[in-house]
Image 1 (cartoon, rainbow, N blue to C red):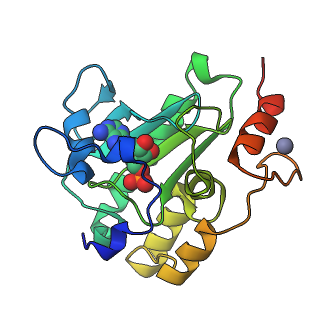
Image 2: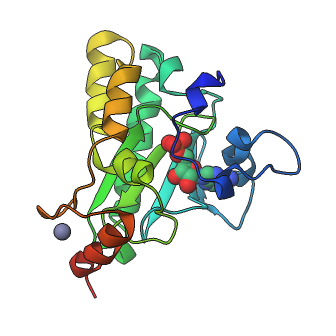
Length: 200
Ligand code: AMP
Ligand code: ZN
């Protein structure tokens, strides 16, 4: 992964904290070995809790195969991506998620290594949501629906990703509530506002 690729990322210094071994971009590879964060695992995938969750429920599904990102996904991976999506749907159907809506999507440009599918409740209610980039990365077309990624892969034999400029535009989108027309002045305003949409 090039240095330039990371200039534009929604990663806070907390998340970049160097781990005892390896670059911060390899953090997920440590977490998939950590029983504290593993939710489930099978022959093809590991499901973990996101260590810096951007909502009340936030999971990541990683393949066992060492695929670095959507850019390396080939037609042969169709079965795997379908399995990742099916695993996400099963997780979302669990009792504790019953009254929640979830997004099952990939970031167009991921910060962290190994392909990972986000499974995230749509409340965005978390102290880890700190920046406009955090917000826009989950609430614009930067967040690619798994179903669309799979359809695209079937049609094109690879995943067609938005350009760097398009990604930049998504990140610079003015803040807007994802549940109503409210246009917040800044992140603290938005974070206060979204509480009114959170089910008590
Ligand atoms: P992405 O932009 O798609 O690469 O998102 C990476 C996700 O990994 C973010 O939601 C982070 O909160 C999360 N994350 C960062 N470091 C770790 C880690 N060491 N273990 C688990 N999740 C992490
Ligand atoms: Zn609102």
